[in-house]
Length: 562
Image 1 (cartoon, helix red, strand yellow):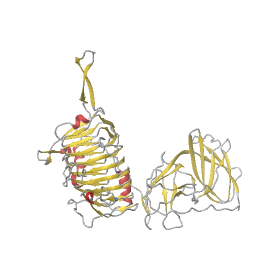
Image 2 (cartoon, rainbow, N blue to C red):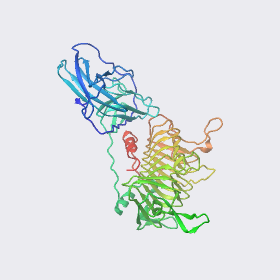
Image 3 (cartoon, one colour):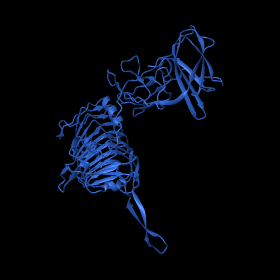
């Protein structure tokens, strides 16, 4: 609902997102007539009160919805910022725009005209920064046309459901999805700074306004904060103690008193000169040593270690970081970016990765030599990855393979890669049906191939959101048993149950997996390839959220570092 009088201005960035599935239709026309027309005068000014010469102004009825064709022409103010508009009685929306060099500013104002005008009255219109409304449409049978009431804006979402209404002044707007004369439509009041997801996939309109998630605080060497973190573990990784436990030679994890190591530098290896050894050309011998106070220094400590970070920053690994047992790498309260060569576990157990961003790999070619951001392999077990972001790693961002088990990945983001997660290897490389993996409340977007590839083993995937994944949200292949419940899929192929096809184009049954699908939400169509009965059902107990707009907005906005 637009404000009467001058618009109430909000934050510098107007970022409003929507999630919807509605039908589209033509907009309404502007009413005509000449009864009681009068001339109204406006003075357009910059935000500092100075004149905005030759600003452009146009006026439309406040309930106007564009049909895609430009209706009202802009009228240009004079060199002193003055402009006159001829109007009939009614309620209007005035939009002003001014370009000064490369800087564009604008304003929107509601005008209520009762049929008379004072010859001496001139209304002031002050300009402000321009912004945009960004949307994310959960695609159904058809995508809705998106319009803003009272403004000449008409936007059709792209093939992924994304749209942007740009060049908008800051303020409050009524955003229309579909045709207001049809049941399958919705009007949403968008307030600056809001993130709204609108589900209109059926006759009931559900608008979700998410609660703002709390920003994590630095634990500050408080071991109770470590214990409260462990209480959040769900799924197969339950029993992981991180820095509060120790792993014996048989792989059993028992409680233990760990130490705290605080990372104080973003350095990794240091090059040290040994002037005691100089060759004939006068060159001293150099040696790479681990930088004191570095992430590598803390991660390579013997025994249970809680790794905290003194400051935010990018920690560029010059070589793979091969972790030992019993570590918690905790980035809470900081902006921690791990770049370079990635992290490896190798017969490692009892590990926690919390509140980290894996980004900017050292190797970017699309081949198998590309380092994973995080590789959990060679029998690693009891590993929990929580509230992390994986981006830019081109081939696969995280893998769980070679007999690794009791792994949970939760509340994390996988974006801008070919595949998000690889669980298990191709059968000609390694086969292990005992691998176990839980995947919940994760966000997958901008992936050229698959969100998750599962081969052999047992995977439980629940409450995840697959938004923009080209080939398949989950590929459950090569005899993998996949229990897939209450996920949101906004891609054409939610789940694929085989990896290869024959020369005739039929599924190669030798690569078939066994997905069991329950209570998932398909926003962009796709077949349910579920087995009639599950090959397995997780033995642990979890509370599974319903796959709806509320789950979608929570996962999209709260996954990743807090």
